[in-house]
Length: 102
Image (cartoon, rainbow, N blue to C red):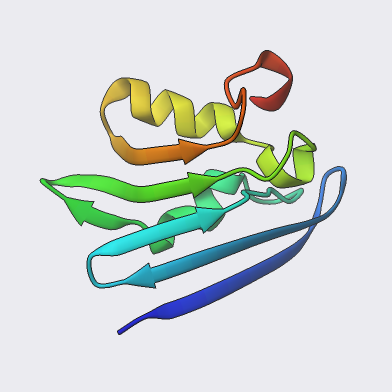
């Protein structure tokens, strides 16, 4: 069953938004945001699905480099690098620029 989760937070740098589209075998996160209390990874991770024993997001879309849309990406990258998280595709021109990973 397809579900859409809209997460709106007061982020460290302004009002952040995140949307997760989820089905039994598909997860897409659009923007990631953090709050004073929670990192973006902690906010989005309850919506991950499991694939081959690992957490998985099929598509991660980052609309732009403002921190209330991509803040905390460094944790996602660390989890990918360690093999704990699989992201099928990341859609964002230059998502790995240093200014967008904080």
